[in-house]
Length: 114
Length: 112
Image (tube, rainbow over all chains, first blue to last red; front, top):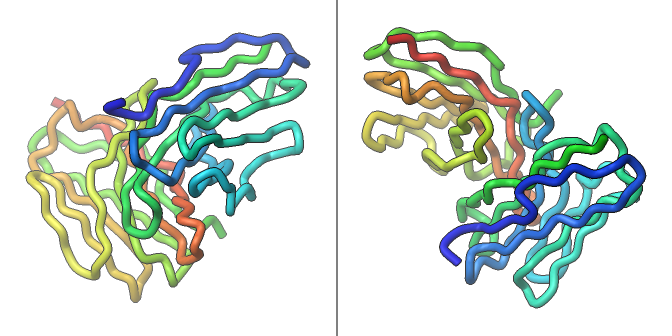
């Protein structure tokens, strides 16, 4: 596709439920990133993929959060037993490899836990 | 100390003035730096990137990098009300993960 595509764009879930957020990166981009942005806050790094492997998962806030990437393309971020503090925009981004290559963001998935 | 720091603002400038946005970073080995603009409710969009010491100009925007002092700045000339947004500074750390660390962002208000 022309840009990074994320789904769902909006999700309201009950506390304790599991959610899956999907990211389809720009075609040919091998690097994929997940960030989280709470209301009025900056971007918090969650995890980075190079191909299907995740060399840096240091930002995942707890073991309720996990992510995978298959076929070097689509990635899924899963949040188990959601809590109200998980409410945020989850942004996916992609780039060619790493180094100096710029990253481009999707429109985000707005998650609200009630 | 945060890895990338910005003054949250708001920075208010009159239309037509120069807006100056600053950012400092802690990882001396960081090699590449990016400025993103984020409108309320939207995702960040890339404005400029800079790798080398000195200035880089693109239209009304100039990015400045001083690696010795570990700061990056963004100048916006002839500021327009449509420039009102949050500006995010990001640094790519020197590790091989390629992780991009963002500052908290500076809110810019351009008053007509």
